[in-house]
Length: 228
Image (tube, rainbow, N blue to C red; front, side, top):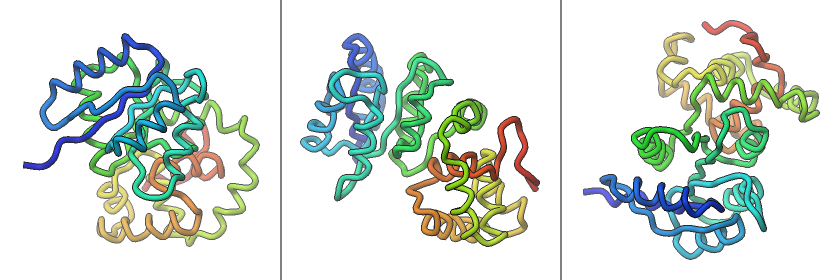
């Protein structure tokens, strides 16, 4: 039997932490190992407890969840996966947290089964990006970052096929779906993604999706070229 997924809860609302702790603690294969009421305390607890997944609120005193996420993901050694918790799915703070290295985001009023499944998904090394809300989120805020020109210059480093892969991934396609659209194997898609991450200096699929919008490869409103 595999070890349970170790979860750290970081939220300044005690009621939310208690609710999440009770709900997740009752699920098979998940263990809540600690709680923290702000980002600074969350960093300390993460260093002490070495959780697999951190459920991170964004608006907190002392240190917000964005900076806490950035520090967690840039620290040497094995970094925990980070799921951002938010009240609204159109939240600039969540967009910034995704850029900082979060593996996805969840609404605080998501059903218990959805939250538990999200924890297991990111613990397994997968990104949690629901295409529709993520696309709306990125589309709303990408124009405000002023990063489009710089991102577009970096995009030139990709081959045509790598660009096609990135475009489809940004549109929410799975590796298997990208392979079908481009008539290549899923293993080949993974190889392309590894090269894309390396060339662009990206950590994972989440950052690749954000980059695709920031570079203009995928445009707000459903544009961005052929979906295959």
